[in-house]
Amino acid sequence: GAVVSQHPSRVICKSGTSVKIECRSLDFQATTMFWYRQFPKKSLMLMATSNEGSKATYEQGVEKDKFLINHASLTLSTLTVTSAHPEDSSFYICSARDTAAGGLVTEAFFGQGTRLTVV
Amino acid sequence: AQSVAQPEDQVNVAEGNPLTVKCTYSVSGNPYLFWYVQYPNRGLQFLLKYITGDNLVKGSYGFEAEFNKSQTSFHLKKPSALVSDSALYFCAVRDGNSGNTPLVFGKGTRLSVIA
Image 1: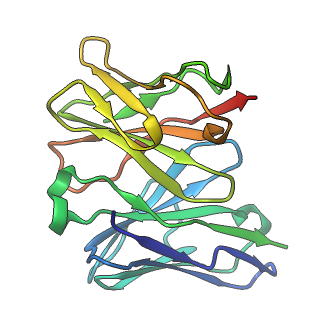
Image 2 (image 1 turned 90 degrees about the vertical axis):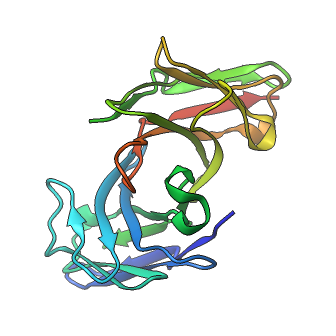
């Protein structure tokens, strides 16, 4: 199946700094990617839909100025957590579909996830 | 709007016994249903999907799921559980009539297979 690569897998940063997380589709082009956040023992919460060449669409309650999303190419979307605070500590996961190969019925593939710890 | 319910937070089963992880869904349009598995500190791995056709879908690692339209269910099953099946399982749904939209996930069910 299609491969989605996410980097870094783990990051620890100081409170007040910014962290960038990359999501790449390795063997297909993704005009749309999705960013999720997972709290401990909780399900995945959709944060935003990343659209290549245009602004991301954020879910209600997600601060767009805090979670900056850039989808500059068909294979790369980045999520930047700005001025991170301890409450931003979480597991962040991206996903994408290879719609060119399978159309809209194809399954989504997920990155390995990024464990962010803000100290 | 779509939603998924996984009524069990935890399922325990002895190795070699059959397992079932339950999922019910709600979607206004055409349900596209998926099961994913997550191991600790990892992303989600695709197991199987139902789009159309046979109600019984077979997937990776010997898992299967049965689509039941009248009960709006999509339970995950395996005839003989392995210890290595222990993980967190997510059911997800998407409205097939709504374009390239994100998946909506259930809260997850932790499966523990005991040797």
